[in-house]
Length: 356
Image (tube, rainbow, N blue to C red; front, top):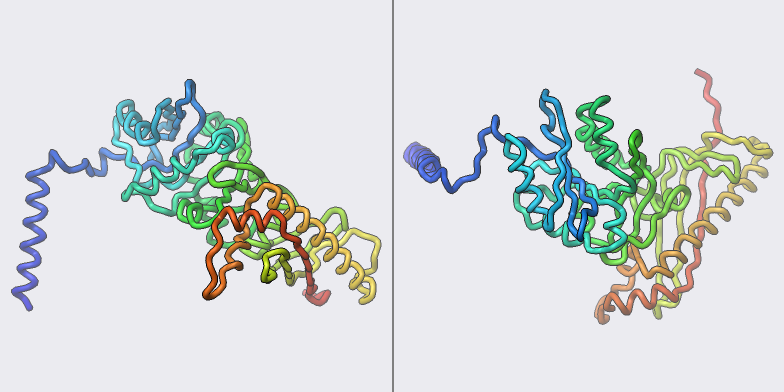
């Protein structure tokens, strides 16, 4: 056994020696000479070019600055950044790809995604975001207030992903390519970077952004099936710790869909006229909430049908044993003309006042 251990050690040392002798062919990896890239911001440039920006240096105590280049290709930007910065920028630590909304509406962002996907040094857990407004202006302004703003943005996304709070759509590159694409949309100006809603894509072209109540319904139907708070101003009520259980059933001929959504929640706030301590009035209020959510959900689904997008992946329910699989075009045609019946069933946790 000792012989094999020594032999293994000899192989490792030999490989290290060979690597040292052929250093002219090996990428520079000296820690003090490299800087990890936390984000790329991609916007429209002039004459059909891409404007790519990143912040340097990330995560070390040195005055930061924003680098921007106009290029024809994404990887060209990474190369040209290295020509204007004293450290070698390593894309292997890329954690966020921010794409300007005008580019997303134009289509073609799949090419940007694929460029990152084929790079073995870059993780498939890179977060992808759509930005409405000027992100570069926001970052430059924040440099005087919070130097590590790029890292804090990354931590925010990671927080919402890990805690499954359903308050915003968080998507990484791996998820983007596995289903009908959706991406979170943020609005950026000089002082703010705020979540707007969820962008729906037809192939790789943004065709719709769902916001406010529609986005919250989408979180319950597709994303985390959980909301910390669901506020319904029209009914003067806020529900808390809302959990959903979604069931879909397609008719055999794909002409209709039954969507049943069970919700469990508790009342966090009520500013209406009903006496919710009364069982009868509480039941009436619950019925009003169910009707409201059914109407809102139906309208949201009709919008998806008109645009022929299926982010809820209803089409996966068309798969049957021993039957011929539908093409994407065939399914979207069925989906566009489908009659949808939406039913919400809400269970409210008992209203108990506990003395402390």
